Length: 439
Image (cartoon, rainbow, N blue to C red):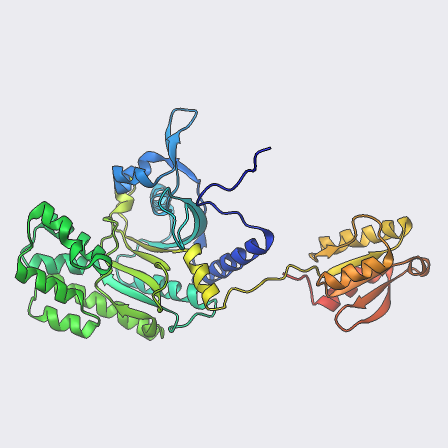
């Protein structure tokens, strides 16, 4: 018989692993809800054309795509942005603005596997539609920070690097570059941190060597790390576009500072995000030690809803991947070993006692308590040992003597004390002991 294994890049979750992942999802979901975001979901299989329209033909290299039985070209979703744009665009006129949505979903990309990256992964996605100003970025960056801090991370663990594609566009225009060359420079900037001067090879091959003076100014601009420095450098450039854009920067950073979040955010013009559909502020979260891939990333994409068939609608959003984030929590000792223990373990005598216990077991479960019992008739001594090892807080004992008296013995497994309660009071007694159903 063959031995079957999980496909490369895909993951399975045994109960203890799934409990930890659900812990992450639970805190993300709770955080988004406190910010007033509404959860949505969507199909995992989409028309291939949806991704071609957003990112072009090259996206096919990363997709799990195929023709279905209806001869349609389809793909497993590699990200959520095109899907949420489709959903919002279809009902944009009926949705109250700003539209604040989030999702936690699974995605698929056929790419090289590495630490923190697989071919099947989950993401928390949050987006705001209908708000053109930096107020949307204030809300989203605040949500991103809280999604990380909810687990006990602090400013010593991570930072949010903030940049602006529009600012780069306006600045590069002042240096005399046209639209194709600006795109080439932005591509080089996106790779500069990893490849250094080699990042400009693609630009040189397409347009020839970049003027030495222009390149020097670009690399100098790339090193700016504060709003004050940014304002100082751009003072000489002038122009309405740059002046208005600096005002947006001040509003964004002042808003985050007023929320007490300035310590998490750094000006870093080296972040431009590789996807061409971004149209304004972009940001990424990284661990301070620099040992992991980006924890999260996002930005503004004002043209995408319209490009995918909807109305013109400003939009901005971000995503947090679960794989790299879980690695960070493990490194910091913040991913707990979650005990999946029962509230109650029932110790049961013979067949008559089992019938009596079953009624109470069903009533307790219906009331929301997690209850276990021996599936098969088992010796009393072994059951007591199992109850003690189960992690349950309470044992209910159904013996011959108790059945004859019309009572159940309630044993506190922590304090090792016990008392008898009338059969009709079992649900109330358990509720009072546990303080209500245990979540």
